[in-house]
Amino acid sequence: MHEKIEINTDYITLGQFIKLINILESGGMVKAFLQDQGALVNGELEHRRGRKLYPNDVVEIESIGSYIVTKD
Picture 1 (spheres, one colour):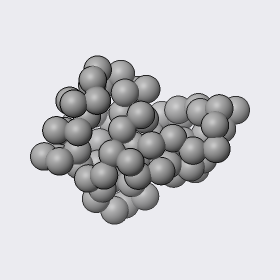
Picture 2: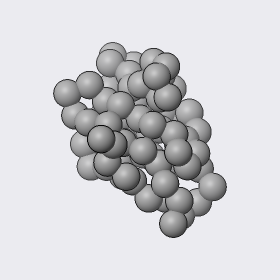
Picture 3: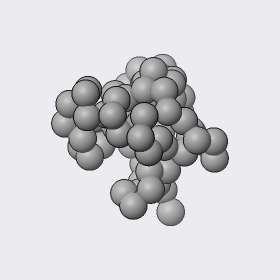
């Protein structure tokens, strides 16, 4: 099951999303994490922190969790 993460904008970047879910604190840590490991966005491996996430997008981060973007 995916944990729901609400946003109040039309989209959020992957880097901002990772900071929002509190797994990494700084932009530099997010950048290094995505370059090294990446995240699955809708089943595709993504390394760009500027990737736009929209409502109903699914983000899976290995060893951390699975999340779905929702809009309030």
